[in-house]
Length: 343
Ligand code: UT7
Image 1 (tube, rainbow, N blue to C red):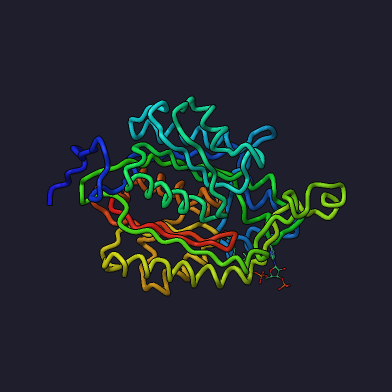
Image 2 (tube, rainbow, N blue to C red):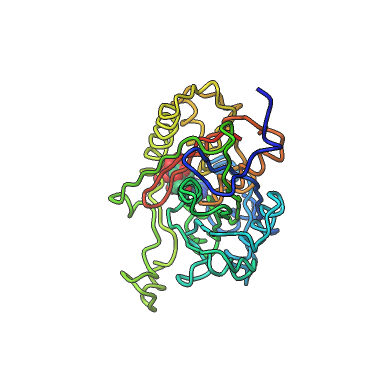
């Protein structure tokens, strides 16, 4: 079948036979690189341990004064340019983040103002590392119901600002970054999101959280002294759940859409740990050659990992029109989610 994408029909209004597709992507990471050697100067760790146990070699961290909306703005501008979309045409901005500029207003509102996207409604989605998948799945609903035509979906984190740089169990794992996608409707039946799946288990919330700064433990001298404004993680417990849930999510997506694993061109998983990614691939009996990994460069940027990876995979020529792609993630909440799409 000839690829119809260059002339993809974009209906004026979306009907029941309309699907949502990603029309453009972009990402932004800070210039400042933090290597494993740099971390050795901060905590009792080694390049050997970090590479062997996580696959990470370096990560990016913001400079003083840089916040989530700054990275999000740069990523969003690239995605808008890539999709030939004007900021003034955006109907809705959805930002997946747990490290927004402030608790409120939402980072999506800050971004709306910076972009000059005056027509856009704006909301944040707090789903930890699954933030981009949750945001993309939400955008899909607004497109398929015909409510909106141009949605900007962003995953952004500035984890370095909530990292306890004395905790070797977490500080080596995290990085800052942002990715963005512009989502639009199409009647091209060979393109767009085919299935999406979201899940959560709130009983496991304490395994990955930032205890203070909300209404349960507001900021106080005591909360600062107790280091409660930093990310806390029970890494071992999360590892096992992450593997099981990401593998199950991919299987369920493929079953729902009646797609065979061998027909999937690329799985783009959340980049939390190379061993998690390899274990998921092994459970699915899916070859690592078709699993995208960039964890060595950026480490875990939480809600930004999958969209940064998608943009990099495109730039590397790994994704062509008509390819079946799976995005899958897992994170704080606990939450998980996946999206199967045809590019
Ligand atoms: O983004 C979604 C949420 N995050 C995740 O999904 C992360 C999931 N968890 C993980 O990726 C892994 O559990 C970690 C990378 C966090 C830890 O790896 P692990 O293989 O589970 O190590 P461990 O926690 O079992 O620790 C093994 C040893 C311990 O020493 P002892 O008790 O055996 O003497 C740790 O103290 O490694 C030690 N250790 C370190 N050593 C050097 C922990 N962190 C470090 C470190 N450098 N940075």
